[in-house]
Image (cartoon, rainbow, N blue to C red; front, side):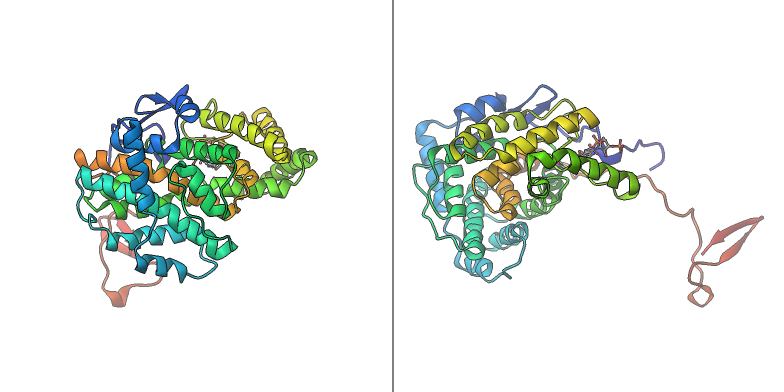
Length: 397
Ligand code: ACO
């Protein structure tokens, strides 16, 4: 529309209010709580409760919340069968996307967009997504089924289901921290997608299905898998410098197909992503237990080069990638783990959207042909013909 201003990628554009989280250059808060405080002093289940119920739980509320989530881990039989029968090489992100779409058919609250119904659906999805991913790990990697520990946090139970065994206390804690850090991040691409879908008053399952699709791309959630593949390509700390030089040489020779260094850069954080620094510390603790330091060494060297050469900092996907690798999780499950956490943030935003809704319908800047008249089909030519419009004017039809 003439006169309206366009910003590529909506950079710097405020598209709505939210009370769920606050992103600033100096930190990130979920409903007022600093992410560092949450990562050190809360478990993921408490954070999920905070996002969905607006307050941290009491001990009783936490136990009940956890029991409801674990109760939802038994998938409706037709969904379990459908997941079991999906082709073996289906991407795990597509498995989760299809599963959420299918789960809608069996959810008694599917078409109820009230806050209470949305909370029930969000809790069920938390359990169901973890169970679906666990089931997919069993099918594709052959790990045995593990029953959730009623006393363990969601991260510990999810890790147990992915590995087919209960993890060490530290491994469970590190996994839980990654879920806390991934849980919410205001109007990122997948959350905005979810809110846009909800703004038409479509149901929560439809919005979460769309959000999973948006998260899949390598510029968003898919970056954690891409970053680990990059580390494997580098192979050894001694190779980092030559690998980086080769990338830059490739980019110079192919300016139209530049290779991005995955796990670096952020639309909002220009002085570093605090979540990445928090997780790096946990990853160091984990490496002391596992004795695996190679990936951290590669990551640190590449980080130093990227800052020196490009002034770019790592984002959360960077340490998440080598942390998950240290935990022994197959790479194709990294972005789905992100889903198992971010579903809480999406659902918190969806409740907010439904309660104060106006359809999201922005404008575009038209770049197509000028106004022209339709030619009868027998006079049309592929590529168009120049038509005399009178008064010395012509148009292409
Ligand atoms: N590698 C190389 N160059 C980069 C990278 C990168 N990872 N990130 C940004 N740049 C370059 C851009 O190409 C641009 O260069 P130019 O000015 O010569 O064109 C410059 O840095 C500035 O880029 P921005 O405008 O800051 O990037 P934008 O906000 O459009 O994109 C994004 C942000 C998508 C995260 C981008 O940095 C990227 O693609 N990173 C790699 C993918 C990634 O790690 N995604 C995870 C995001 S965080 C999350 O989902 C938890």
